[in-house]
Image 1 (tube, helix red, strand yellow):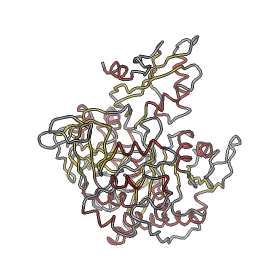
Image 2 (image 1 turned 90 degrees about the vertical axis):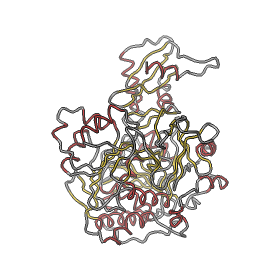
Image 3 (image 1 turned 60 degrees about the vertical axis):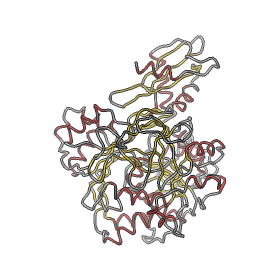
Image 4 (image 1 turned 180 degrees about the vertical axis):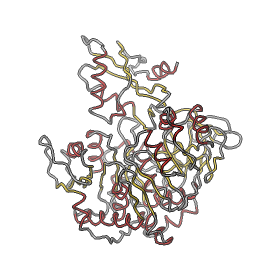
Length: 560
């Protein structure tokens, strides 16, 4: 298990039984001696169904359609290019780019040669990308033209990175960056690369992806997805969304985020659906895509819907082609749910998932039909089971609130490079194949699941998870700050916004100018969406008798 990476980076063998549960229908995938995700998710469906000349996706920014055959050639060219650089099975390749044709090909090319793909978003700062580069010990890093400066800074000081690739071309290395790596243009690398590529015989449990969480304790955790789990996810989603070649599917979620990446690399291929891709879309762009490209199935976050529906011209766009609308990334409030229902003429579907498992495992629909009542999150997706448990793991009665536990063809497996606490976290998060969510749910008398609240101090703003301790860590580095506490404040548009309570050093006067300075300080050191949109100064933050900041009091204060 996890045979393509050193054992010290993976869960200990005694923990493997917690990760191995699967429904009988997926034993065929896991019991094979070798199985490659690119072959099973992309190439086999195309070959068996004769889809080579059918449209795989439409790139709105280019106004161009790509066939499955063209896309497979793109995958093979990049895989051969990576091999020419010496990339071997088990090597880690990090990519940081937005919604472009070659970006979608990155995962498939990396999987096909047995290497491991790690995505990053363009909003992640050099500090955040650098942490991941060092944690996975990346050998190759791929960046995007006009955004390469952050990549160069991120790999500065790395002892493992040998190659940096810019797509479509690499920006010059800044004078203030000292790196000893080879820099390549993607266009040149793939221009003469062979269009044929044999897939590596990967074990079903070889690692295919390491995707990072938002970091519930201030440091993101690397979550390992295997070839088998990726294949299972693709097969299951084709079924639970009733995908066919007549579908046109779209999501606005960033491709460098686990949510956006799995939507584009796992979920449409088995059904032969056509993907619509658009770089960094604004609300008006999403409306245009849904209208002009006759999208049938759309998955997004409630915040995007609120922004779309708040536009005065939103009724001018024809959304009648929509057959399925999925909502994820944050829980949907009733007002937003009702507004969406009124606009599209049917109820949207809730989808519950998390980065460690790489799949939506609770859904409120069957095929294209919503079946759950009102705003319930639904029931387990095909291939999964769920129960509500108490703090000891015992299943609770209907109507009782507790922690949600799920199991299926994916489990929680964390990358453990010099993180001794991760093994214990994995034990806490999973037991006997059951994965525990840091959320409180209850199950009604009919078996439908309902979300109540979060267990941790993660802020969900606009569908993106923000770890409060991570923001606090940056704020506390400012020379005028003594300490800070960050909480989520309810917001009609984003669901929550980041609010910081800050205690200043003696002699420092609070001011609006200092608030703006602190906001810019955070923006310069983190992904910009994580900055505190509100800051309030306190002489002293509320604490208990042992000196622990009482964040619960601050959260309650913002909800009054």
